[in-house]
Length: 364
Ligand code: PMP
Image (cartoon, rainbow, N blue to C red; front, top):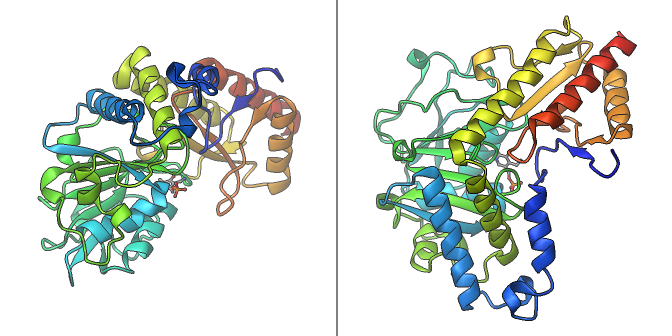
């Protein structure tokens, strides 16, 4: 209904309603201090508590081992694509990049500004997915191995953690962190922009193995320097206070709702319903990701009638009229994209798939 519109956006995306209501209730008067959290010093005791609790809850939910630090950074995902080489790439060194789509390509192009980038996958298979492990070219001297766990635009997700023969793994989990359980101990760095499963935009979350701190290049801006951020417990300069505050509320919501195993179960159930609907459409709806093992549980892009742009526009328009919103595919690839972040219920996906059946019957 118009009172409960559905929001399948890829980010910024739907947040749990309870979180928004809590924030609304506290907005003018946070914790009885008489004014808003956005008006309060980041050096206050209140913010110190918000900052610490968000770290503690992340550590608990993701079972982050003690030899890893959790940092909050400014600028979201792309800022971290610069911060990674600036903090980890040795002078005159290089890093290995696995290219599986647009976000990993952007990360590699950014890293080239600060050092040498080597491509792990054979050039004959650009953006084709994840080629057989035997074809990967790893450089044992690489400062790190970079991959994007879930390519938000193409809807392609790594079904495994790559075996890198000891090279520290850096993973962009902007659209997949909090959607599944992960073994943090396998990684050097995990990072994510917050505006999907974690809260609101312009905040980055970094989980870094302690021994990788202290390696920043001289030119690394202080505000992106992981060691300086760690020493300041992520209050180096004014942090994105409101985004960290919202992150804290989202994490409490995840805890109340059963934690990561439950989020993973829900995500699998929701994506299965959607992929089954596509599979049962006799080719009316089609997934661009051919290999079923690589299909994302979070972002599900599809085309209609073999990429009939007019029909896709009609689908998106009629969905909007039915209060089903933010379905337009990324501007670089077109089509339709459905994002299934934690705040989206199974029932909401069912409303969408019912709409898809109806649209197919009326238009094929
Ligand atoms: N990485 C991935 C996987 C993303 O999906 C996005 C944003 N959609 C980014 C990085 C970039 O994040 P930001 O817009 O916060 O810079």
